[in-house]
Image (cartoon, rainbow, N blue to C red; front, side, top):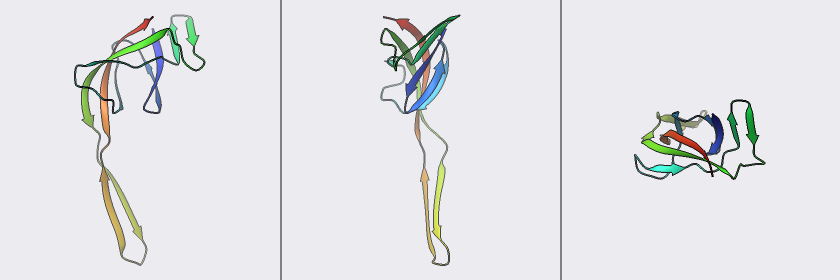
Length: 104
């Protein structure tokens, strides 16, 4: 069984037991969260597609870690003018373990 969920402006194909890294979600490590209604749910040959969401199905996950990604360097300059700016950025991520895909 798998589902397609949307979080942080991206879509993910998930199955129970999967660990995925998504844009930061609020919550403590070990907390259980509901990822809301999925866009699609499939079990063997039976596929249900929402328009746009499936309201009678929900995906439940557990927060495994709150972490930050690699540092990205943003460098701006203008030629011949001596204008240079260097900035760094580290994105916050949440690691989730999918516990179950359940029908309400």
